[in-house]
Length: 411
Image (cartoon, rainbow, N blue to C red; front, top):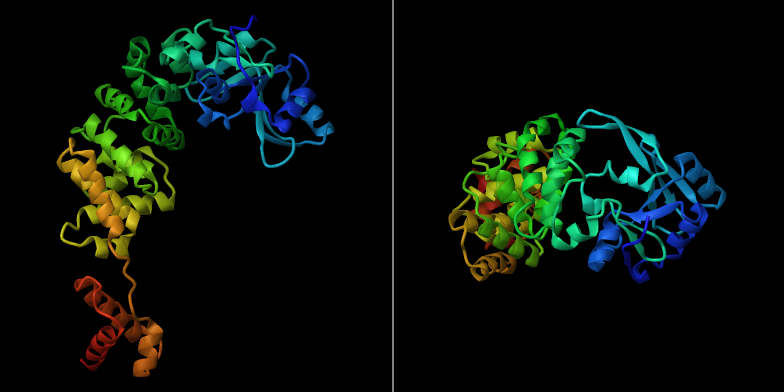
């Protein structure tokens, strides 16, 4: 192959990375994936995503690196991938060049190859086939990868329909990569192939769907991709019918600027807009595998959304500040998708500025004051006092709360 670009390698000066390439040997390895795209676009944010492709088999990679004193982890040997830790905390995934022998739309049976061009033909998009050596020479096996990347064109390698049938996750990756790198509307040929094959998404595991959708949601230009997905019936039943591209962009900008916890969950709530807890649970169960922390956060947001009469102070105490901010933002955008960003940010800041409540008494205070032992009576009284305290927006102090406990104990 002949290089098409020569780039500076200042971002790849890690001694560990250089050492890995030295151990693998001249001509046997190249950088691939996100770090190459970042280098071509001079995008310094993505240089940490460093992957290596090699002509060597996983066994040979393991042997060479192990003999050089590196830690080697067999993370995916059946697919040609090992993870190497040369020194320090930084690790590098090294994958042997492959060609597909058989695919079923979810996984592939692969054979190893020494051909960079053959490996490129099994990849999804032209921009993902780019390679770079440690001298900064960029190679473009398909001939259009660099041009497509710079033009913001997410284009399938070869026939789009064929690539999707090899792995239907590529439908979601098409929209995610457009959200990250695309300019304007998605490539028509690729988009039509995704819509035509959308029923294949039903064969994917919810774990794989979750990973792609959550990455897409937080991309800077996700709204265009999401709108195209909704119009094309991609993941039918997930998205709300009344969806505003402008509202999404405003919500994302404000949520990120206010440093709201788990912005991907906030944006997911905007896209789903569940009517109640049952609808939320059904949508999550149908499409996603979320952690308990993510589920709790979504449920807290929904609870606050439905408690329109409670104050920010009370909601923050019961459900957390971030869930309260998220619900406040979502409520305003749901009501007016074209809400002014300044007004939306001001609403979030109002929650941020609300004083944090702290219940002024503990079970020990009641035990000491009224000489009662631990047990159901103590728990019931403490809970009732807390509910009473919250009705007054947490304005009652310790003495007043203890007096309320006395009244309850005497009834």
